[in-house]
Length: 119
Image 1: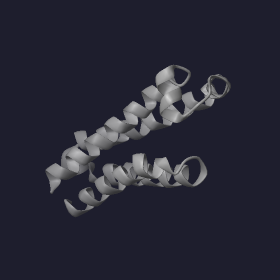
Image 2: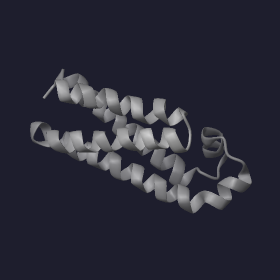
Image 3: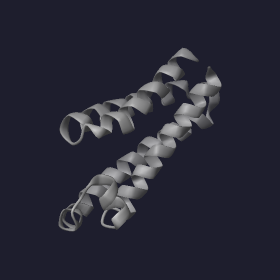
């Protein structure tokens, strides 16, 4: 169970690194606009907000990787950052796009459950 939990946490961290790259570097590019369904005008007007959001996703990824790097001693850190991921995903699904529920909150919840069960 601990291996499955570690893999799940790692995948959630990678997802958030991907979100960071999309939001900070590709928001106004075709890849970012396609991923988020944005017009060129909206992407240009909101790129500073997206970069800020990308930075927060990077912090979530960094926290998860930090927790993983500590092994058993990093359990509380992993749990904290996974809870942050799930809460952010739920909030995003409620306020921005229902898709966030499946792309962010669900993977975070699965990793959280596996981490909790594998402790």
